[in-house]
Amino acid sequence: MIRCSLGTAQVLGLKKVKVDALPTTAYLMIGEHCRFNCAFCAQARDSSARADLLSRVSWPAYEDAEVLGALDSRAERADQDGTREGAKVPGVFGVPLSLQGSGENTGASAVSGAAGAPLSLQGSGENTRASAVSGVAGSPLSSVLRRVCFQVVQDREALAEAKKWLGEVRKHSALPICVSAGPSSSEEVGELLRLGADHVSIALDAATAEVFARVKDGSWSARYELLRAAAQRYPGRIATHLIVGLGESEEDMVRRLAEMYQLGVTVALFAFTPVRGTRLESAGPPDIGQYRRVQAANYLLREHLADIAGFRFVGGRIEDFGMTRAELKDYLAGGEAFRTSGCEGCNRPYYNEVPGRELYNYPCPLTEAEKEGAWERLWQHP
Image 1: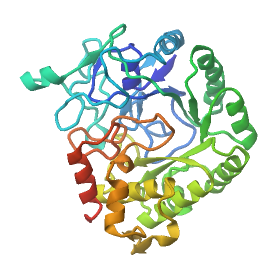
Image 2 (image 1 turned 60 degrees about the vertical axis):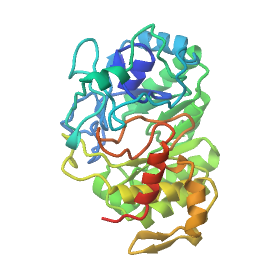
Image 3 (image 1 turned 120 degrees about the vertical axis):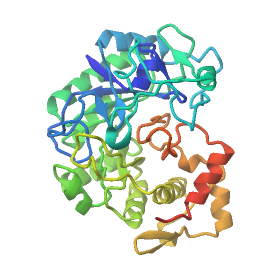
Image 4 (image 1 turned 30 degrees about the vertical axis):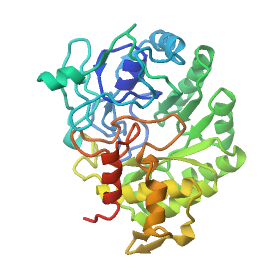
C-alpha cells in the first residue's frame, strides 16, 4: 500500500474529488509515523494527528499496482477538456468547492480547518453546482502531471521502500522524480539519484539552529552539513524545505535563502500550518504580510534579481529590498513570486491553506486582483 495526496488520487482517477486547482505533481507518501518528533508534523513520533494527514492534506492509501497503473496511463496525458496545468476551476473565495469521495462527505476531506480540524466542503446552491467539477477513474479531467514527488518519513524501512519505488516508477513513467527523505550520507543521496531521482530534498525546515532545536528533532549540524556536502557533490540536484513562521525573523529566513541559492539548492518555501494533534496545534500561522515579504525576497534571490547585500533589515524585518519601489513592483508584477515554490512542476494545492482565507502559496497563475492584493500585503505589518 502507498498513500497519495487526495488531489493526486483525483488526477490519477483513483477517487472522485471536486477541487478548484489540480496538482501538477503526483505526491506519494511512504511510511507512517516518523522516528523523529518534530513539533509541527502530523507524522511525528508522538503526534496524535490522523495517520493519513501530512500538513492539512489527507493521503488515502491504495494498492501499489493501482497507483503504478494510473501513473503509467496518466503521467503524460493531456487533459481532453482543455484544462491546463495549474488551471483554476471557478470556486467560492478560491477554495475547493466540494471534497468528497465515493459518496462519503467527511472521510475524504483534502484540507483541514482551524488548527488542522478536518473540514468537509460540500457545494450547495446554484452557483456552487454550476462551477464544481469532478473527476473519477476514466474521466477526461486530468491535469498534465509534470513530476512525481515521494514524501518519505524519517525511518530506515521507509527509505528502503522508497528506493524500491523509484525503480518501479521509472518503469512506468518518464516523469522527473523528487525524493524528500532522510538519507544518512551523501553516498546515500547518490544512490537515490542513481536509482532515478532527479532531485533529493533534505529538509532543514527551520531557518536557524536555534529554531531547529525548539521545533525539530535530530541534529541541526548533521542535517545542515549533509545538505551542504550533497549540494557540492551533486550540483543542481539537491533541494530543501524551509518553513516560515516557526519563530525565526524575516532576516533569519532571507539570509538562509540567500545561502541556499549560493549553494545551488532548490528551495520549497512553506508557511507554518498548525495541525490538531501536534505539539504546535495551538500556535498561529505566520502573518500574511510577513510571508509575502519573504516570498518576494525568495523570488528576487532565486532569479538573481537582487543580492542579499542590498537588503536592509530593521528589527529583523525586511525594510528595503535593495531597489526602488517601482523596480520592485516591475519585478513582482507577474505574480510568480507568490506562487508555490520548489521543484519544477510542483504546485502543492492547499497544502498550507485554510479554506476561505487568502492563499499563502498560489497553485496556479494569479488573477489581477490577487496580484494587487499580494503587492499591498508587502507593506502591511501586524
